[in-house]
Length: 398
Image (cartoon, rainbow, N blue to C red; front, side):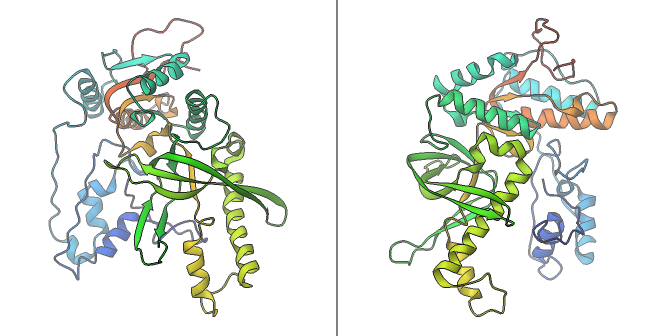
């Protein structure tokens, strides 16, 4: 997922550094002047490339790395190795199925369609019952994941599954909810004596679970651009990392707007209004408390204002959505015992080897997120019965 395309966009907030993560990493390493530095890129070239239209992963290609290296370092050898042993899936039908997908990617053959013991089709009507069975009888919500291609499908799955898991829920956040962090945040806990240096990094894509009670905090309504108003809704709760072997709860403030169904009706507009609203609220509070306007670097209160901004729980409130379903791109790097895949991806039905190759990589990436069992949602056609094969090729689904 390390891209190499630089961007010329100069508008504030649209990109960081050069816009090319690969170039920025290599520039930071300063390999020409630090000859003992080494960089090791690890990944699977069969997984999805960066979301930038690339057909391959530049950080896993020696030619692309050489093109991004400084001249003196680029002249040297770039070592590479391919690991062939599969360790995520145990011996059995799921590993065989994943191996067949990888073989189809390399040979250009069609994707496998025959069902296996641990890789089977699933009717849409059976999605929620199957999910509930997996998460209530011997499992937990973080042991099962639904994957889709479109954000709108992921949003709908999240809302439906959360409703099924918590049919009597009256609040947007309750104990036991699985959430997905949508923006990088660094939290610092200075403790009562202001001497602690403990920090917690909550990165975009981190899965967390709500533990303990949830306290609803007062909402605030602010004007956005002098016209529209946005109501900011917050809660205070404790979270634990799902990836931690011994989770240590951390107390945070969440903004819950992204957990509401209406928010996703016009995501781009509401996301912009939410971010502008949170920033505007902070500016108003700084003016009311200290008489500070938003400063420029040379202003006398710039350092104090910056310190307040970094430690403000409202400005740095976690942006989260439900974590019961994600896109396949967001799922990369994750693994779950059980994975349910919605294979409705436009590339599946487009003509041309390029699109079919993209779809195979997408299916391979999604399938390799499963450790034990895998399902593909199979939609019926004109009321016909669904054969016991896997929907890896378009069949006129709705």
